[in-house]
Length: 234
Image 1 (cartoon, rainbow, N blue to C red):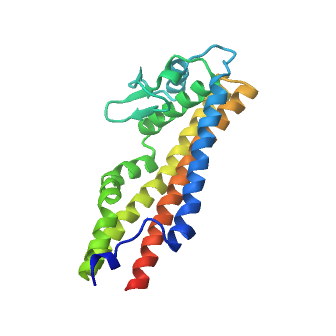
Image 2: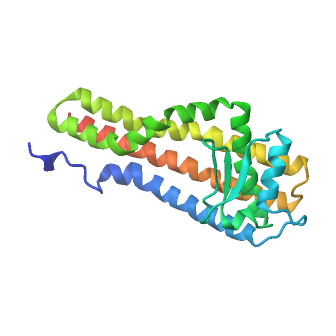
Image 3: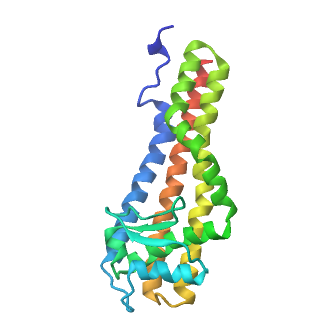
């Protein structure tokens, strides 16, 4: 058979069954998080605390002293980088005194606290990150190539590599949820935000967490689609 008989088209019944619903959910989550961020970015917190100050407060709460907080360009580009122990806060978070800025900054500081405490899930995630990166690029092409060649070991390797993407995203969930819990604990216990402000920060963090759930759903859907198609043609 020619290559065209094995090529997986962009749209097929399995795409409609597995992938499309997951992709719609992922798109909805992206809209949700951007909407929540926009809304809470317009609300100035009562204490006038900036994102940078909030992140510093979380670090103090957990006794973390070797992390630098710095501004970076972009919107919603906030992240903690364990390679140089820096909390990188976007332009709308670092110097902003909005409710959204405090919530996001505290979340990133929560990641720093995880690293300082040796949080096991984040160690597992970092360990499988290289394999996940390879799987996201080469997993599907290897599986399809192995199927065309009739070489089952290559199919298996490709599927395993692609499955590692979903495994990585699965391990990411407890990491993200735990960082948000650490953030909200400090926000509430230390009074960084109160009442409706704290609820607003929680809404932003909840919406952001759901984007990771949706990403996992998309990966699982794509894996199922690939498995079913190859099983039917074997």
